[in-house]
Amino acid sequence: MAEALGRLALGPLWLGGAAALGVLACLLALLTQQAQMGALQGELAQLRGQLVAARRGETGSHGANLGPAEWGVPEAEGNTGSMVWRRGKRDSEDTWRQPDQRHQHRKRSVLHLVPNHRFTNDEGDVTEIWWRSSLHQGRALEVWGPNVTVKQTGLYHIYTQVLFHDPTFTMGQVLWRASPGGLRQILLRCVQSMPRELEQAYNSCYSAGIFQLQRGDQLSLRVPRANASLDLSPHGTFLGLLRL
Image (cartoon, rainbow, N blue to C red; front, side, top):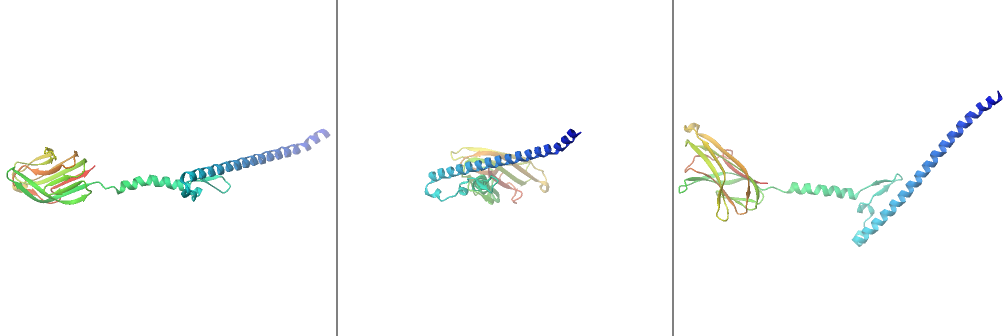
């Protein structure tokens, strides 16, 4: 009986001792982690000093006046050991932002023309359209009279439309290219059938394409009819080029 009572009395003592040992082990683990964190912070501080010294040696006296934050070196905040990249992060953001800004500021060459008047060449049995600029951006294209001159070699999207008001059975338009060497080439051609009654003789002819144009090329839009009756309104007849 006495032996049993002794065992019951020793039970709580054993449990209390085990709990105390557990708490002591946790404290030792925390102290070990703090010591390791302190050692890591010391190594990082040493590496930071070496990096700053090396960069000062590369840049000379100008770099000697800059602190770690100006070089993009991580700085410790508080005792948590967390690192913050300051200048380096801003520089990287600026590097990614600059190409977008240059892309936004770069303007494509665009030329949209509307009719000024028409001119009939009786010898060639053609009607030419003299143009005026409605939209002009960039320096790759110039217009003078019926001709558009290419100032910069490149790929161009070209579109044309002519609105006819003519009872002739067929009407059409042809876009010519004349190179500096004298070579002439048809780039676009469009033909439309026309109603016989003058009141109903309205029809438009639209063409478009992408072409490689050379510096010095001249483009002109012609209707292969003398005294062709055209609608010279800006929304009915126009010519446009866009450098790609």
